[in-house]
Image (cartoon, rainbow, N blue to C red; front, side, top):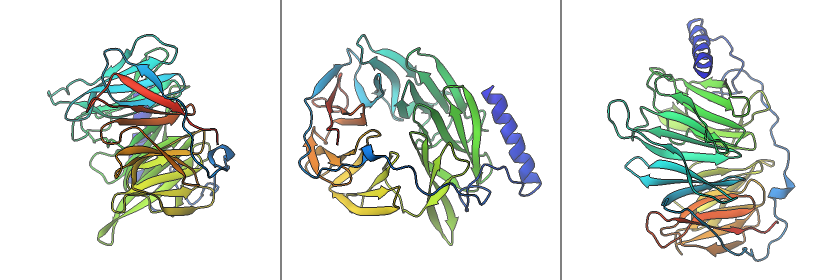
Amino acid sequence: MLMHTRRGWLAVLALCLLVAGCDLGVGGGAVGGGNGPTPIPGTPTPNAALVATGTGTVTLGKTQEYRLGNFSATAVVATAKGLVVAGTPNAVGNTALAYLPFTGGTVTALGKASPASDGSVRGIPRFGAAGDWAVYAQATILGTAWQLVAVQLSTGMATVLDDATQEGGSALLATAFATDGTDVVWAVPVAGQTTTLLHAYDLATGTARPLLSVPTNISDVLLANRLLYYRTAAFTGGQNVSTSWLWWLNQPKPQQIMAKVAGTIALNSRYLVWDDANTVTLTLYDLTTGQATTQWIKNCTSPSIAWDRPYVVCGDDTADVYRVVRTPAGTTAAFGARARGGLGNLANGRVYWIPEPNVSANTVVDAFDLPNS
């Protein structure tokens, strides 16, 4: 059914290109956002739970430990009901994905990268998880011969959402897909063209739908509570021009935001946060006001943000520790060891990370509770 839907969408797109400009009705309001002038409302509904009222010391909860048995994890993402972990590194990323429910039991396999049909090595360069789902790509080091797979955690059932064959051999960027446990969204260039297609898949109904086509590249796809962020890049005036877009998926169109977003980016339904490698700082962008606080946190990179309470976690590159940061006040508390530990995410009111002592992997995941405000 997915393949049938994809072919129908590509046929419509091809016809539109032949007749030079028919409106697919799925675009945005400016170059890079698609076709059609109608924007969505400019600000999301404010979420009071994501704004801290306190400015005092951040008090972290007692560390809890989750044991993975014989599985050595290099990366972890927590969902509402368990931990999704990746391990067995290779030149591309990892080759194995597994799941440990919070209710206990043993780690169970979710997916494993296999060689491409021509024998090229594939790995799992990136994965995400939310709700009852994990989503991962397996691909070569150039992003070719790829598959995008969704696995239901409670059943272990895997569904191939898309692959290089269906997309005419186009490559898939490691940052070009995301899930929030409700939808999966991914961007793929049209083979032989300068157009990129943005797809969505409803995990509850098992149906795919086209979101838009744009005459640019798309990268940095993020999803949080049905809020989609992505960046387009077009070569204009002799240089690449990057544009950021937000799209509530229950609305018909995306909207451009004026923030100059770059680096590692994190999103919830109130804030965007990203790092600047030159200044080694974080920028906090308030989606409801459109205001950016530059150099918000110094000596920190690689942010992750909570979807349910007002906290960011980042890596302090000077002290070699992680920091919990209260939004928007910016008060912080240090934990862990930045130098070698693997930061996971903020979920269920907790921070999850892979601790020392091992350099590249560990059979333990640690977590602690965050304050409520």
